[in-house]
Length: 218
Ligand code: GRF
Image (tube, rainbow, N blue to C red; front, side, top):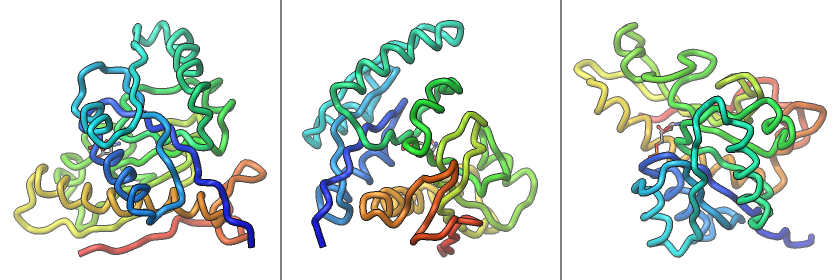
């Protein structure tokens, strides 16, 4: 068996970067065969950029000129990514919507993590909406990015209970702790060749992935 080269990652963030840091720790510890070549933010000065630099990871910013200038932004983004030559673009709390053109150009090579059990609760404020609805379970989803917002095929979900007395902060903390486990796991599956994208859909262990893998957490 030939050893695979580490999967080259570019991670896009807009804020705290705790998922980026969890992926960086998994790479550094050798738990996944991947390497972060670049962390980019469209917001200068966010905490995640400091965290990445402190971990010895190259960082950059690409200015966001406004939604009307999305294609201009994506040209700059492509230029910043070109030097890093990533195998995989990892969206980790990246708060901008990428165009269909960008997503199609990188089909099967962009992942996102969303704090809900997709397809439920696409969009923002998921923890609050789950509490308002009185749901008993919640979670997070790692999915391939397609042109449909929060709509690409889901690969792995963490499912957590909603506890009596939960508030938005306790619930989001419980979900985020699981994000830091499932996101590196999916990247590891790609790095090991277990997960792949063919014929416009995900395959896991040589079979089309018909439904997300679900992992329960306490
Ligand atoms: C996470 O909750 C993730 O699910 C969502 O944005 C948040 C990012 O957090 N997409 P962090 O920046 O990784 O700490």
